[in-house]
Figure 1 (spheres, rainbow, N blue to C red):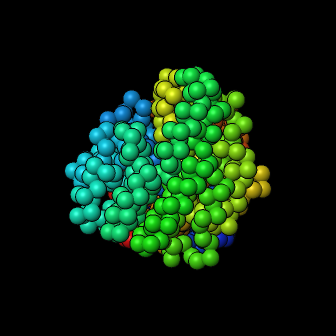
Figure 2: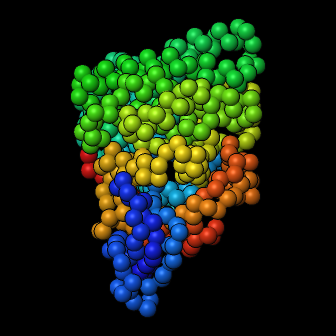
Figure 3: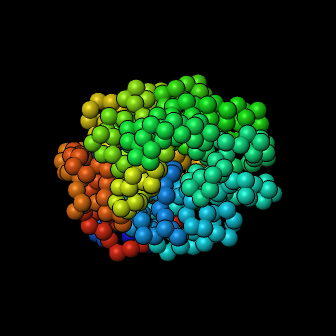
Amino acid sequence: MGNSTLIKNVNIVNEGQIKTADVFIQNGIIESIGDLSEAVSDETKIIDGTGKYLFPGIIDGQVHFREPGLTHKGDLYSESRAAVSGGTTSFIGMPNTVPNVLTTEILDEKFSIASEKSWANFSFFLGVNNDNLDEVLEMDTTQFIGVSDDGLYFTKKGNLLADSPNTMEKLFSKCKSIIAIHSELEKIIEENEEIYMANYGEDVPIECHPLIRSGDGCYQSTKRAIEIAEKHKARLHILHLTTEAETHLFRNDIPLKEKNITTEVSVQNLWFSDKDYARLGTLIKWNPAIKTEKDRDGLLKALLDDRIDIITTDHAPHTLEEKQKPYFQSMSGAPMVQHSLYVMLELYRRGLISLEKITEKMSHNVAILYGIQKRGFIRKGYFADLILVDLNSPWTVGKENVLYKCGWSPLEGETFHSKVTHTFVNGNLVYENGGFSDFVPGHRLEFKQ
């Protein structure tokens, strides 16, 4: 890659401040930052950034890109292409593809596919449950960016670590990597299902979803997991927090790099509330469930005061046919990775969060939390994963501009007021003003725990 690019006179959003400068990219790396008008050759591509904002590329710490095994919903090519159009330049994929990623051989296969098909940089969790626990305990888990049970409960009951204190005791006492868990108690969910089925039969209204997958089921699960993790000094990460009550279980009195217990919020839980079920139905059926406005506001407050460490999407495409079935048959999850930054920039426009905080939670902190090397910041010597944004360019989400393979979004009809105009991955301008470059695969993320 002998290419070079100069982004001139742009507002750089990085490390808690916004400053206007030039950024010079050469051979995939940020070469220099400052007043660089005299420092380029005739071959350098020049982009005028006047009035626009330059962010480090988003690192999405939780996606389900569906390959291998479920590619009718999405695949590594389609979903990473949608991701880069919205400013996500790196992602970490979850283990509930088919087969579930329960061995290093299956994990290596996913890395191999991504190295040929992914527009964005990538890493993947190794799956862990009762079926492979003993094997995982024998592994050097520091070779993995993390281990996770997320999504494995779709395969069979009893796969959630949160339901198995004995399993958590074993894992937390020996595992040296980040352990990222889906935190709900299946026993509480099943009891609630029986109550609502007694009232409604199989035709339970979607509005009951946050009552079935209740706040109490989340809170009790998270509280117990944290207690066990603290006992063993394990490195625990609670995925997709959904309740205000849970936020009070997390610390903000020490820096992120010193935390053993961390958590995240997915963008949909900062955008939707239970009032949206009447309008959108099962299209916004997620596990854990979208809950109340009080929960939504509490999650944002905890994000702002650093009890919540990062923002993710839990991007989980399903076909419309799969989503529009009756409550118990409708698949949980929805596609979000193309639109995550737009949601957050809309919250910025409403005065609810700063650009600096968005960057901290979507880029800086994800790199810190997972130990991702030379990404997540706009720094000399770092990979040039960058996104250029026009904050005054309204557009409306519609089927004609949704890039997910499943072809729909729960945000259809929403008008956003910002637009990603350029996305760089490893210095390659992969997306520019609605168009894509020739395909160049992203890199495997390097990390140090």
